[in-house]
Length: 212
Image (cartoon, rainbow, N blue to C red; front, side, top):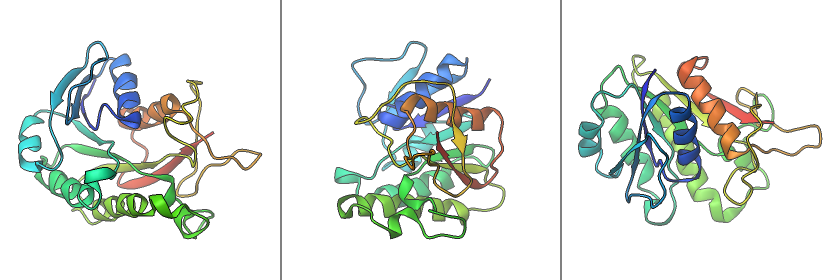
């Protein structure tokens, strides 16, 4: 079993990853700027922020995997990408990093274009570009740094939570759509895909997409 720290562990993606990982017997630490009123049994909760990368890295001594499940919204716009890069650089070399991305950076078809380059809402472009920047920074890390990056489907969030089915498909760099052209994944099934990658690595220093 692994010791997993989830940065943003009380957010939508983060809390699903926390729940899935602890349910499989992993030791899980959830990190967020405030402690939640409702907690998942067996999870250790600590207050912390990626904006204090050195302090946070010191608190995470002994973890095997750091999952980054943050959204650059509100006061985090423009701050998340550099903070994540600083945190990754401060982590021990043997710590694997997993990052939750957005659908905007995935490709529409092999070779491109990206989803964000098409009919994409202007109001969420800043956070989408920042998430893409996190991927760029991971790619620029030394070859010794193990990481993976997961793009969820186009419809992924608390506004459309869905159910846990236990199934999902991966699409490499291309966004996953169903036979009707819809791109969707529930929070629970996204977490299954994420924790599966922790347990059985198939995407060493790679990104991949998830959907139904």
